[in-house]
Length: 377
Image (cartoon, rainbow, N blue to C red; front, top):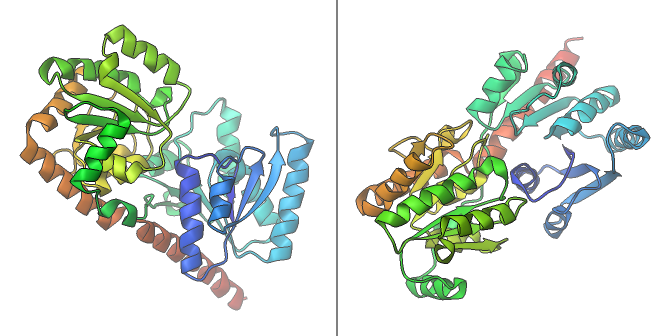
């Protein structure tokens, strides 16, 4: 069972879907269980014929939470699951305890974020319940370091398994005529296109990309900037575009279902995040061979090796961000080389096959150790 608190259209939930699909290919039956009533990504799971159970908790730490925990225990006991794999803070707390009470032999907890503890008790609670798991998996080196050095988890229990994506949709780019059609559909004038994909939220640092792009335009006046994605910062960012006087050069595309095609359309991809434990969006851009500029923050240096698979810049610094973008737009040979190396790097390390294979090996090694201990009794 893959256990989650919510099913939003975000990186962690996409990992869960990818794992469920790949485990099916490996011959493992997988059920996804969502504890709360926040599950807009449910349709995507169901369209892929993934069994999803929802507990529909509307508020944590209420009587409904106890009822959901009891229901979860009944499902785990009646279905004889071998593995419970949790993914977020709340489902990790509930899932680890319930799985151990029921007697699930393998409990794994993935950690997709570097938590900011609201109080010492929250940290204590996380550590105590996390220690019930057989293994904790960080999605990046930074996340695993956080688990060991900040959360106090023994290093023997911590593994790093990078997220992975299916390379097939990104390997073959659209034709030149298709790219021209896309430009016309988007209403973009001629000129190099800089872009960023993902949720428009404060921690993604898009304000610094806007400030940087206003500097880019002084050097490359026909450049264009596109954002693909929605989010709470949309209104604020549009106001900043007006304030900077670059309205005709910046396009907000909203939610897109043609991300592979859109990425092939970009001349430079930018990830200006202030926090980012891993980035599937950067993985996808790398898979299309885009030259990339990214913040040197948290897990992004696992993906972007400076001057090998892209350019790293200090987070929150619009001037250095602008310089890096200009460098790639003005130096085609450097951009092409970095993009090519990024694609090869991603195919080697960040595929769905690699991620699922490592998790399957982890599950099997834990189950084998448990069986060996039983046989020795």
